[in-house]
Image (cartoon, rainbow over all chains, first blue to last red; front, side, top):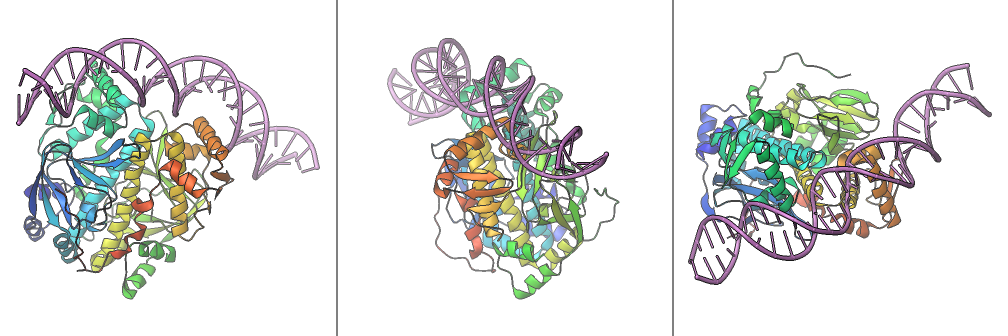
Length: 252
Length: 252
DNA sequence: CGCTTCGTTGACGTCTATCAATTCATGTGG
DNA sequence: CCACATGAATTGATAGACGTCAACGAAGCG
């Protein structure tokens, strides 16, 4: 849970008391094997799923069985914080690698959000980051080549892993299979494999048994057209009731 | 602003007092012509943008100028409610058709959210719907054919227009050009045109000068693999502090 | 040591992009 | 009311990125 507090603190400023309240949250610990489903569509959930260890993903499944991964969650991420306000799942959550989760009851989270408006805003903000990542992926899937998509995914996971204290942007764990990467980037396994080969050929990175080593960060970011601002890491300027007032551009 | 209250009420139950508070919100009215940008990336905004009339979109732009529309907003939608917790835009907002907006100051929205936890949750929930739509689009773009994507977009706008009281699911306004539809579905204008022809050929709908008439809803939904649950319309069962307790499925 | 999962390769097919006109619709000014 | 400019829709021909199918090699595991 300390990891979760740290994650929230990346983007929201919390008082000592508020931090204590977050730390007091707890829940059932559960372990999953890779490929095991954690939440299925239609289910009514009563607890949010905090990733304590491993890699977890949210996905959508088509009629013919094809899958599209829509989000990855690493240790410290609350992977369905939004379920607090929308407990009827319209999504699936699965363990990408072996993973450990903590199920934090909605009742507790609601109680906390209700009592501490700043925490409620922090939750909301975290959810907004999720949405921002999704929006970026709509752009990637709609308008970029396969190599740019794959490179972008690596860039994103690199930055998130680094921010989460789980590695550096040039060396971090990413325990996904090629099939899962293909499901995330909207291409086939075969084509993903060839795309990875092309990325290797350009000496951008190595990806061996779940570990990524970026050899050329700038090159990778350039291929990906990666701009980290959508991850809202520098947003720490927020929070604190009335602190508006900088002049801002007005359009039209 | 009444429209906005109505939109929130689709998914959150608000008390009479809370409803009054929402209705008391207000802001500068602004008019835009089609194709005019409303918010640009990097901008620091201090007011959220409520769509009073017309069609508004959020998009991402690539290095080579290609655009990807990530969301459409119709009258009654607060198109960047998330900016309340993340005021530094990493996105662009543009007027798809001629549009009128009301800029509601963040300060007011924050004040309201801080004083009324239920309203804060309602805001958060609305933002979650946005994220849910984005997740669905990641799936559409990653794994569906062009015709399914286009059909899905029409289904979605149909349901949202109907829910917003702007028409019925078989007859509603949708003032976007083919180029904009192409930017939303991740294909080219040329291909979108041919896809529309195919949809017409299958007698699914007509789309003439901004008005959609669905001739075969079931057929359209089937081609699109459309399942409206992600729009969270039936989620009205929420809100009201402690009303948990139905038995729910537990995984694993 | 067989089984299963994951990664890799080759040949071939197709959906969608690209390029470049052309038609159609709308609106403006003379 | 016509001439013209402008944006939107449509069409044809061609190219390329990615999917499909099928097989094989490598690696972990009970």
